[in-house]
Amino acid sequence: MKKYYFTSESVTEGHPDKLCDTISDSILDECIKQDPNARVAVETFASSNRITLAGQITFSGEIDYEKIVRETIKNIGYENAEIDIDYKTCEIDINITKQSPDIAMGVNVGGAGDQGIMFGFASDETENYMPYAISMAHKLAKKLTQVRKEKIIPYLRPDGKTQVTVEYEDNKPKRIETILISTQHEESIEQEQLKKDVIEKVIKQTVPENMIDENTNIYINPTGRFVIGGPLGDTGLTGRKIIVDTYGGYARHGGGAFSGKDPSKVDRSSAYMMRHIAKNIVANGYAKKCEIQVSYAIGMEEPLSICVDTFGTGTKTEEELVQLIQEKFDLTPDGIIKYLDLKRPIYSQTTNYGHFGKENLSWEKIIKM
Picture 1 (cartoon, rainbow, N blue to C red):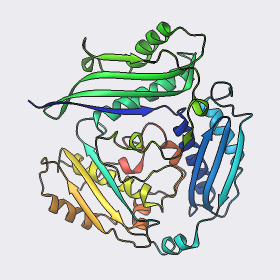
Picture 2 (cartoon, rainbow, N blue to C red):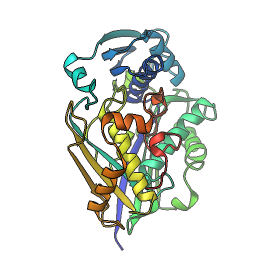
Picture 3 (cartoon, rainbow, N blue to C red):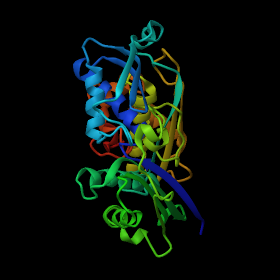
Picture 4 (cartoon, rainbow, N blue to C red):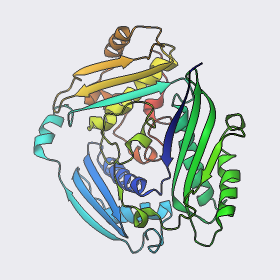
């Protein structure tokens, strides 16, 4: 029997990179709420009690950028500049221009907003067709935020990370080898209390009992201290958590980030569509595992290439699956936007704990193929 170990990580919404992703997607949502045809590419940079916004936005409405930034930071739970960032006092720099006419001329006629490659993936090893390690890492990160916000563990702060190593046997998850959680906390708390609380109120409430045994390694704050966090502990930037956002490294990634980009950017919309198609190939019984690659050229509507890999698990040939995809789906940027109904303010829902595997999103819907 083939045995191997695979590891994926996730981060909480208070992680400095995710703080930036959330701000960018919150601005995107407000733009699309006012103008569904908004063109948005906004980046956020977070440093010591300072937020910098930069990018290109073209739309017919008006936005109070500073208000959105401060409300987002407040909702995440940051209000202390001495150990992370304060939504009340942080400085906010804004450098927003309009979309380049050289890009707009291609997008206006229905073409892709950039060249690039995108991947979609699905596997039958979990109920939501996601790889087990990233699915569990997301659940732990989300639980870490829940127990903080609901004051179940009241001394936690917003910044945090999780990491899960899964032991596979014959390509199926057998057990969890290692769980690593690093979480920001108030200075007054003892590390032993923190470890006990995180194990009892986060790990044991999240991970199935049959996946943990006496040999599972559990590490909580291995440095022994995590008081300084957020942008004070480490700068944050939109788009730096692309592996967390997708498949935890279990499948390939085209390199394009998602947050802060409107759906005319195929980096985002096409990656969502490829996930939808891969998931439905698996859900319809055509494969146990499926990865799809697609490529685009700026200003051109149709993709340049489509590649399907079912890793030897397919009930149809990969050539047959490519033909099925081409017959059933419109893969032009406009076709994807219409099919997935992407001109809606839905993007803040996607920012944290993965863009895939959430059943309320249109690209996660199971259809008959």
